[in-house]
Image (cartoon, rainbow, N blue to C red):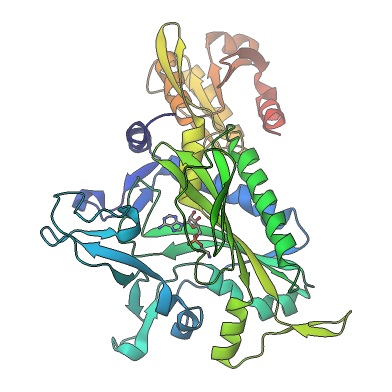
Length: 448
Ligand code: GAP
């Protein structure tokens, strides 16, 4: 697997990810996604929405506000308990997450003594309206889930959904992480894709296993993750166990404050096994807290059995940025082609930021350029397509390989006579000659 530094440099050079506020020296934990990064992210989000909402009749979507009434976070327990244990170096005053120091008592940077651990609430604070006092205080959401819980009844009634059913949401979340790092792995602003699945109490364990299997299969198929690089970490109050590779390589954990148990999906990054998705069994923790604090009844009435109850919840929750990292690590390959190194991002077709690049063999022949630009324009409404004539054909191929473009379509001098062009496939580098008028349908056909 490629190392992180190589990937970071490719991401910047080729327009996937830039440091946030870079010309001012950056801002730790904030990243900007360039033209290719935004396409990759959108493709990942589309794949998730397709699997979680569009393809199912038991899940519907939502897009809730980032800022919510402050009572939400008091009820959810985040105001009280969404803390990291932090230690501070008594010499250089840098702060570290206590659980990431593996019990070390000295500063990992200068070796000086560390303070005793103390809790640090990682929710960002801001104010709503013109007053900046305590009454106007709100928090930026640290998870998208609460927007779903407070809308449970709205959605259930508007859509006349029967339990079991789910509500899915994609949106920004913010955490003032004590320690960021490993590129986009741990950020202070990130995007979550979460789904709260509401079930009858007593059935949650079966659904928990069901969603574990669904989500594992989604990761494996969407990113074509190689054997041995994804596993399940089962986190219960009494023990943490690994289902899958490297079972002894495990950092014990407790379930989050709202969960009776988690299945975390972990990916084997170059920096070790790390969480990419958490599948929590949240019981009725959230709905019962909101019911208590808001004073509004949130129970569900089952018309068939005439039962009234607060549903239990199973929650698959993942971060888009970690999925971007997985997509890049899985895709990156270096090959030897005619004694030269070829770097190629072998993204699965649905994830590739660009599907086609149209390249004229000679940029000083106006008829060729016109034909190539015309073809690119024909493809654009159907496939992410670029036109490029800024280098020789060899260089252009290498550039497109390095960003994972599926097909290069080359227009050459002969194309002017026979109205045929060459399609080169990214992974095999095979080339076929195809009538100009058929390019669009052939590419769409292959994409399907
Ligand atoms: N609603 C449940 C929840 O928020 P979580 O395990 O804290 O659970 C879910 O977060 C996912 O969000 C994680 O698996 C991870 O992919 C992503 N995530 C969490 N914190 C993150 C951070 N600081 N930077 C990037 N992604 C993060």
